[in-house]
Length: 206
Image (cartoon, rainbow, N blue to C red; front, side, top):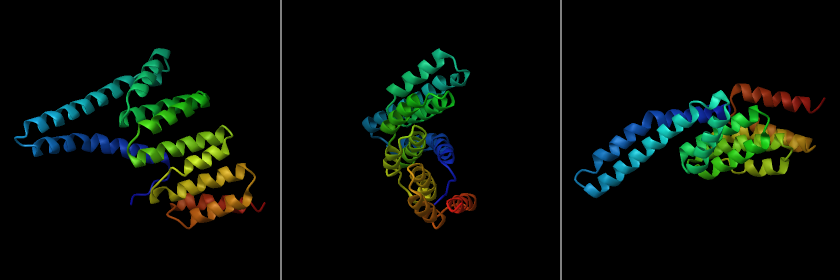
């Protein structure tokens, strides 16, 4: 299993997958239906819907970095109305915009919305990780710990352990933080992440 150092790597990998494999998967499905006209029509409709959603996503977010109110409003409308992977990506993008603007409540709302739109488990884990980090910033440690429970997959073990330690430490639970980081070190952590958690454990003794 591919291991990621953070959720940004996961987002990039998911975007690459949809970009690189979306057309090939669609073509494969269409070729397989043969003479089943009804099935071919349905499949073609699905492909066109996905292509339209992709184009709408690109249009909505091509000007988002401009920071113009109308661009943000357009992106918000797309994210609210698109209940699929593209809608989830849109909410992730908007959440980052709001974090950069220190509008953390709006960022949390977007991440909750994106979580509801996502169907892919890896994408849900990405959103949950970002949501837990945000809840920690908002001084909602119990909510952040609950959000972490929604992250699934072995590739997330070390990253979750690292953040769990930070959350527990914010609650004054040094022993809980130590336990979380020690578990992270023993898991599938990358050398860099493992070393960082060891440093945090050492700092608990100072």
